[in-house]
Amino acid sequence: MSYNFSEMIDRRHTNSVKWDVAANELPMWVADMDFRTAPGIVDAIKRKADTGIFGYEEVPDAYFEAVQHWYATEHNWAPNTDWMRFVTGVVPAISSAVRRVSHVGDNVLVQAPVYNIFYNSIVNNGRHVLSSDLQYHDGQYTIDWDDLAAKMAEPLTTMMILCNPHNPVGKIWTAAELKRIGELAAANHVVVFADEIHGDITETGYGYTPFAAAGDVCANNSITAVSPSKTFNVAALHAATLIIPNENLRNIVDRGINTDELAEPNAFAIDGSIAAYTTGAEWVHELNAQITANKLALTKLIAKKLPQLHVITGHATYLVWIDCTEVTTDSTALCDFIRKNTGLFITAGAVYGGDGHDFVRINVACPAERLQDGLDRLVAGVKDFQKA
Image 1: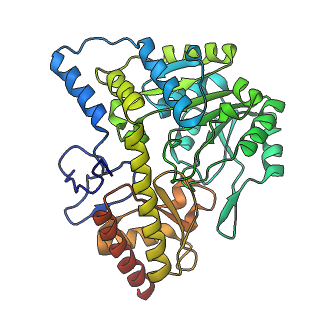
Image 2 (image 1 turned 180 degrees about the vertical axis):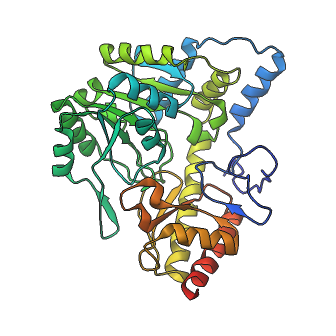
Image 3 (image 1 turned 45 degrees about the vertical axis):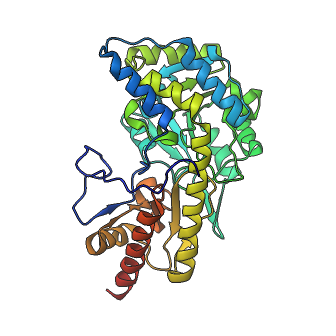
């Protein structure tokens, strides 16, 4: 590898949300990597800092052209730059779209277990969460198509938030699955908001299909959100892009973006994002190779030392979803015990809804040395939990 994914970086006392933990604790919870970002991004930010002036910023055409270039070269989809809108984050954009596309009291459909902040964006805006839970059988998650169709057809269901690829289960939806979701949504007048923030993080040999690329029906009835934040570990840049092919829907979302003041970039967002999308491909490919190796190491160790746990096969994200039902049906108690007794901080799955209470989520985006430390703590914690 030409990039260093083995460097052990001390992130304590750096205002890091992830590393705001006790001295003996090892955080492997929030979706934040422990790798330095791509050098091209750092260089772009340094050049910007050297200007010494940080006034109001506009979003140039070069930004949208960089997004288009990235999706054309990395994901075989070249969305029109006219379809794009800059926003300061995917989650604020979801909340804004909920307010504009649906009405108070409407149902917003999700597929639990799913990223817990979706629930906040729905409930905090006076809408109802309606979940068509993913079905778990023999270590795999699938869609209950009859249930999804029935819930799409409910009169109050006006919007769906789709996680593509899916967090936390790591599933990459196929083009056929996405097309079927899109057809159901269009038939029932349900707008799909596709959160594709994890789309670049896929295991070696796997890729993902953007929802809007799955067919014209999907494109014409969707809002796609993308961002370099997870891919390059630059969440604090606060930069994301909405891609909305349908002009009428785009105009509706535009009003929300302006009303909610989501369109003004900070001084480093544009330069950093352009650098990511124009210079970062090789870095991402090597990153994905490292994450693939880390997932394999975790899976092998758990099979050998903790066979009562079952790693869910998911080919996307750097987050691993683990079935704990042979140890406990209360993964919150398990995670609390492990943190108290070993210092390992992982996420209990109950926050994601559905059957999440039976699972834990572990972030493996870290150097192999740190991963091994975490796995050693996990083994000790689970074994001690079973003895307690």
